[in-house]
Image (cartoon, rainbow, N blue to C red; front, side, top):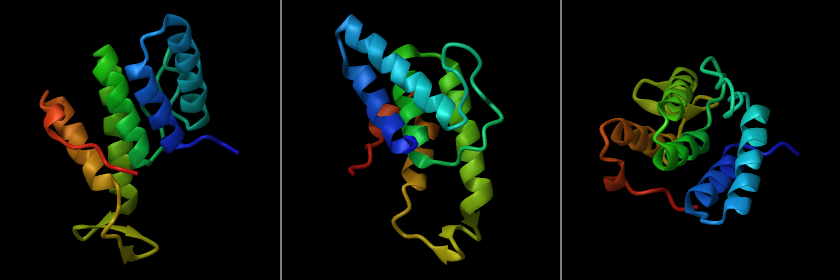
Length: 130
């Protein structure tokens, strides 16, 4: 079973909150593995800014990583994922799946947090609750 965006988000949050150096190293390795498995590239090498990933939880994860590293590559990668979401699922003002408008889609909050992170006000935006 491939770990997806939600697992990436969980490890990114744990990484941000973890204070133990050994545990952080383990979490970072897991983040790298999950990111590569989801087409995001290698966080210690080349991030894949041409990724096809279109997962809202991946945006949240990348914002978490930006919050604790201040590395712009994470916001750049999140922007690419956002572009993919908009290109694949945003139609006539709605996020859709199989032609049906979704009222509970997690993408709008992820896009809002990304915009806020770029403007350095992301702490004002709530995180989604799952």
